[in-house]
Length: 74
Image: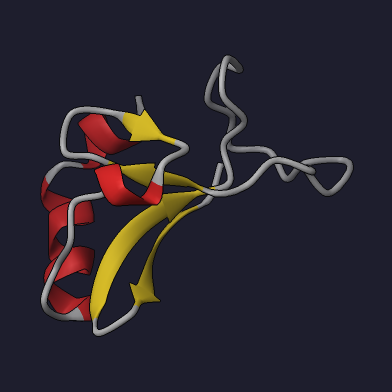
């Protein structure tokens, strides 16, 4: 599962290529998922971009991922 900050308008969000309903995996997918990217809400993952937690800078989003790694990767 890839988790990364991504620019959304003038702000940044945290996205994942994790497929809803599947367990997290550190393996590279065998095929390209047809699902849309999920966004981090601060409490979990959502397919709705308006649910995303927004950050003012990419460094702030990166630091959030590092500080909350266990929650973000669960």
